[in-house]
Image (cartoon, rainbow, N blue to C red; front, side, top):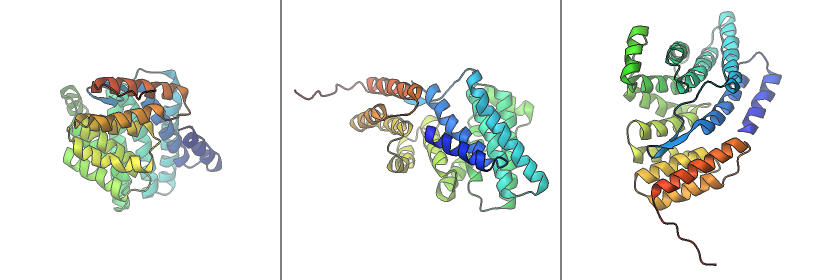
Length: 276
């Protein structure tokens, strides 16, 4: 995570008026936020609620900076690329607002993101990366709580279809350049969290572990799916792997180890201790 953030900052220095560096730094920060916020509940590690923290202000500033730069470029010369960056900037802020239960702010940013991404697709129908944001919008709007659906009605938020959301996320996985890994993680998470399609989610997340075996969040997610499928020994291997991995952020490392311990305890298996 730290390496990704440093690479993004280097890009910002080289191209200070381009939104991509700021988006990539925000993405690196997001995984740190996700790691620090996640708890183990209902048989899965997930980031569910986060309080308002002053430490998160830089993340929001990065999203705002990326949005401002992209929109300035759009005014000069509209392109699918800049509409995509503008949409991803708004999606960046929407997900933190959502995590903090700031529903109105999340809804406004989400709608703006959707508008930019739809425009990007209108300008370039082959821009599969835009389908990450559009897929998540469709999926989440169709799985909102009753209170959120009432809020959606009064705010005039466009509707969405979970089926379309899954299809769009799969397209981002298959054809995306920048977004395929994130799309794969969120599709697996949503299939687990909302649809209880554990076998399908396991198939979706598998290639991420092949590509990034040292990512502890992916190991935890796979362990949770093995556990739901009753494959306790395989779950144990994934949880142990997550807890043993080295992470540059001490806070994140300690939290992952705690999540791994809670996950293992929930399995209720007696681990075999090798004789000395």
